[in-house]
Amino acid sequence: MSKVLVIGCGGVASVAIHKCCQVSDVFTELCIASRTKSKCDALAEKLAPTTKTKITTAQVDADDVNQLIALIKSYQPDLVMNIALPYQDLTIMDACLACGVNYMDTANYEPENTDDPAWRAIYEKRCKEAGFSAYFDYSWQWAYKKKFEDAGLTALLGCGFDPGVTQAYCAYAAKHEFDTIDTIDILDCNGGDHGYAFATNFNPEINLREVSAPGSYMENGRWVEIPAMSIKREYDFDQVGKKDMYLLHHEEIESLGKNFPDVKRIRFFMTFGQSYLDHMRCLEDVGMLSTTPINYNGQEIVPIQFLKALLPDPASLGPRTKGKTNIGCIFTGTKDGQPKTYYIYNVCDHQACYREVGSQAISYTTGVPAMCGALMMLTGQWTKPGVYTVEEFNPDPFLDALDKYGLPRSENRAPALVD
Image (cartoon, rainbow, N blue to C red; front, top):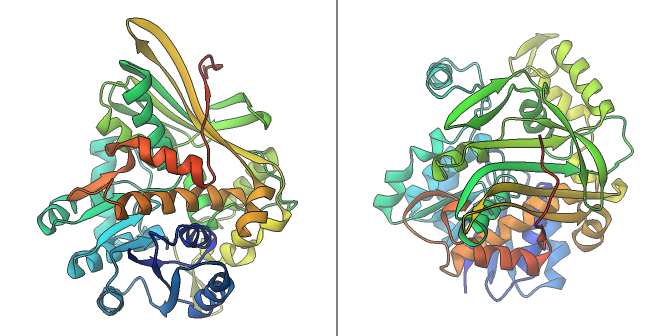
């Protein structure tokens, strides 16, 4: 029925590819491409006996638009799934436009070199105008909207869990549960234990940038920025227990603020253990989280990239990680003139994920929504020319697909609220 090009072969991509191969009546042909072709070959060899999907592989440097264009023209896919790094979103979007192919990704664009003068000038202007200072934002990709509209192509941004499923939860709540929504709190809890003194559950470079940035939330249509990790709350998570969580800046707040302008407050919280925070603060204090290159023994290195090489590969955490994740959204608002609260969430077991696809739950909870989003696009349920985030589409078939393929929703109509 369809040919799909997947760019990336890390932990999240591996899950998404596994799940695509479980739906071979839609994903009839799949090409896995990354800078390291041997990783693609190994995954293809592992999956080939288990699926009717025809799998091929290719080598590509996703930073090189010309290489991407050549690969897309050669393979002629119906959809490009970008599950590489956020640094590469724009080059892959450019290649899709050049070749007339629909596009999707799991995280919004951010630059690899935050010291680039041209990028820096635009960034500093945005900080003053918008009111938040995170390196990642949607403006770079939203700028492609007219290009995709004119080309008659769809670009789906941020179809992981958060961002992604959390936005579908918001669209679902607005469609079915509320007449008006006053507040949205997005809670991301990882109750898993991998046994290491310090490791990150997804790409260390992206993870540590995100966590060490100033926190921010949206209130009455404006950004409120706070020092990193300065707002802490405790919450009792279903099937996980009580955990400390901290307010962070997160990309879906930006798009939800745009698409649900009447919501009075939108916040994002993520759980962290004290050991993780102690390690991160120490690394930040000594400069290891810096993205500015330094000269060491005559060789230029980027400290955070060197740190990434020292830390455990997130894709290797699967067999070690035990426990569960709990990610969802708590809403307050009104229905039929009466006050209402509502909590929709998913609980995912690390070991169950490993038994199914060989990954821990962090990769699973991002890879499954990526497959389900691709499924929506390939079956014509989520297609309209332009650039969109998940909450701009009908949430019902997407959440039904998540229920079916491994991330079923749970609901609580009288949840404890976050003060």
